[in-house]
Image (cartoon, rainbow, N blue to C red; front, side, top):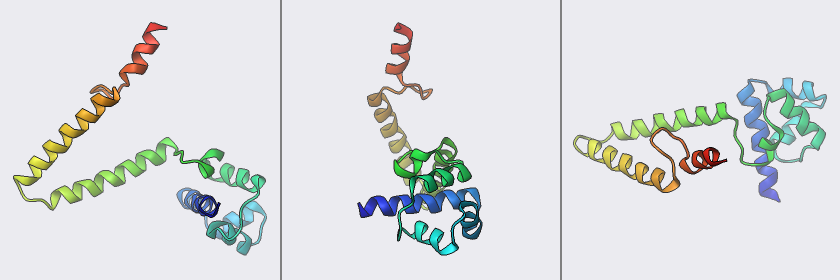
Length: 135
């Protein structure tokens, strides 16, 4: 239960920061004291569902995002960009020819995984496409 409380608190903070709203402004929008809002973000207290609904509306996040591991497409794209930058920086630290060999190896591994998952080169799920065509 403590993990869920921490998870929701972190999601509240992430949503506020992503939207660029200060803690003071968020407290005002929710019509609560600043300390009450800080307690929500720190996980000291759990939000009421009505408060969580208001936070979802203010930040533009779906309500389920605060409870489940669901991301908005924009946030997924942002996270992917960050991870690709990190990956690129790591590859740049490798000297040639090791860098090229590692890249080729990882690309081939990803292709094998995608084939195993039934995803074609264009990123389409073959099983889903075939099911749609047959119906």
